[in-house]
Image 1 (tube, helix red, strand yellow):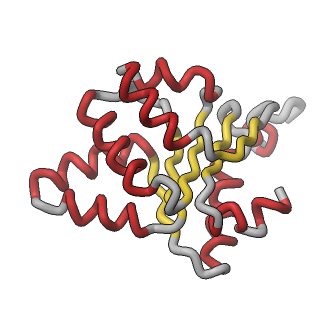
Image 2 (tube, one colour):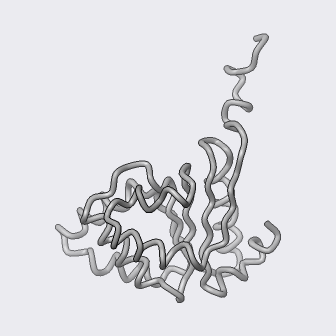
Amino acid sequence: MAKLFSCDWIKDANNLIITGPTGTGKTYIACALAQKACREGYSVHYIRIPRIFHDLNIAKGDGRYGKILKDYAKTKLLIFDDWGLFKMTDESRHDLLEILEDRNSLSSTMVTSQFPVDTWHDLIGDPTLADAILDRLVHSAYKIELKGKSMRKNSSPLTKSGD
């Protein structure tokens, strides 16, 4: 973790993948690293995967699609939270490939997911596009696999026994 907080991985345009069960702290770690990156002067954009494709569809209709892709390409650290929570469409696979292609070897992408990386090929769907997407994302990525139970359950007074 200390190496990640140095932000050298962002300077070197490497990626980061954080996986683990719900509530284990994936988003918390992602946001902590994002805050550190901001303090180091890097531009950061956080978005949940289900929302990005909705936003891109609207942008295609109102003429902002190209601008959004350029903005994503210029951002030094782009964070995709909740990877794999919905089935990708042909359009979303193509959009994702465009985003990652523009960023490949130039900027860093961080992904959080409940699903292990070895299941992502099936989550993406189309084998050819899955190969292309994962080639740009996974091979230059640090990987953190979290384990354990939900911290939300542990910290909630409603789930403690004896109350």
